[in-house]
Amino acid sequence: MAGLDAEERFELIKRNTQEIVREDELKNLLKKNKEPVVYWGTSVTGKPSIAYLFPLLKLSDFVKAGFKVKVLLADLHGALDRTPWPVLEHRYDYYKEAITLMFKIIGTDLKKIEFVKGSEFQLKPEYSYDVLKLASMCSIRDCKKAASEVVKFGDNPHLGGLIYPIMQAIDEVYLDADVQYGGLDQRKILMFARENLPRIGYDRRVEVMTPMIPGLIGKKMSSSDEKSKIDLTDDDKTVREKINKADCVEGNPDNGIMAFLKYVIMVMKEDKKEKFLVERDEKYGGNVEYGDHKEIEKDFVSRKLHPQDLKLAVAKEINKMLEKADKKKLDKLAQKAY
Image (cartoon, rainbow, N blue to C red; front, side):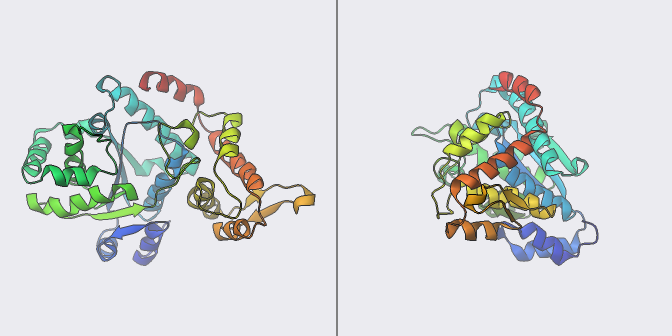
């Protein structure tokens, strides 16, 4: 989006965010810098589902706002969070292919996206020096608290999980990032970075967070629960079955279907100036089109829109997105990675 002023760029970045720390710092950055750098990292653990479309849509907003976007595929962070070392390279390959595909579904300019492999800079001596330096200043309690929403600790935490937030903070420096973006589950780590980077002589970065999308079943999407998420390799029938079984109580908008509609489908529709179509038999009111999420939610809450009709329409939209997926290639990569 050429020609946007600083305020328009700010509003684009703020869209669908939960929190920005801090907004005044972001506004100053946009006034001073025509092409700042934002980084978003994901550790190579469970299979990325279509829920990843939400953070990638936000990265697409950053691209439109004139940012250089760095996607950190954090292989070493994956190992620190219990991914077996022998499959790290294969997990990296799967993540890169899956995320590239989702950017294509969105229509993001891939020339504006730089993929970075964590181990390519995290094993350098100067990076290790900074990790040890910060580790000497942070307590076990601080590190565990920072990573508690992200890392699987269990009753007997592994040391790797405590190093995780230290590395994520220092990543901001070595990726030359002005902004780090993450989900709200990352908040404690992002605040850990702001608090601790100045202790070793580095500037604080702006931290941008978006809400967490609930799973199809239950409140939280789980990479280990196939029923709670839709995989990129799911066929039409599987998508329809999963959506059909998803939690979606009539009149109650607090569910994964409505969240995916709000944060993914309707964002894409609105950006392309398209309508969301719900097909219905004439005896149930006939077909209806929606221009924004608020209209859908209003009809759903007032029970003018039945969950089953909504589910059929959502399943159709998802299957349309997944038509672009090279499922054979993804399956081949997944066999080695998982």
